[in-house]
Image (cartoon, rainbow, N blue to C red; front, side):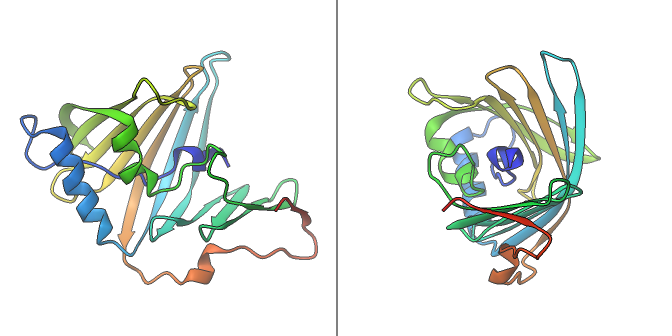
Length: 210
C-alpha cells in the first residue's frame, strides 16, 4: 500500500530548457497527460531507511486509467482500485483487504501528481541531465507552508520531447528516501475497467473494511 502513497503517475514537466518558466512547463505536461486514456509501465523501487541504513528493492508493474483507476503488481502484493473501492492482496499472508478510497488516507491517486501537487507545492526546475541515455529535466517539489503530509520533498525526472516521467524520488519526514525508476512505458492499450478490480478466491482471508 505504501507504493500508492508515492504513486506513479505522477506527471510533469519540460520542453524549452532552463529558461522556461516551470509553471508553463507543468501546464504543458498536464495537457499531454490529459490526452492519455491509459498507461502501463514496469517500475523498480529502491527504498533507503535513514535510521537503520538498510536498502530494499521491489520490481513490479503499474497500470493507470483515467487518472483515478490503477493496478499495482509485485511478487508479494497486488493492489487495484476503480476510484471508489480499493482491493489489496498480500500473497505471503493470503490476506485480501477491501476498503473504500479515503480522501484523507494519505494514498496518492495518479491524477494528484498533475493537478493537486502544482497547487500545493513549490516547483523548481533544477537542471537538465541524461538518464538511461535520454535527455531529461529534473523538477524539485517542496510543500507550501500550509501543506502538511508525509512527503518532505520530491524530485521528478521527465524525458524531453516525450513528456513522460522516467523517475520519481521522494523523501519523507523521517528522511527515508524512495526512488522509482519507470521503464517500458506503454500508452493507450485499451485497458478494460474490470482490469482495475481484484476478486477473492477461497484460500484468501477476506477483510472487508468498508
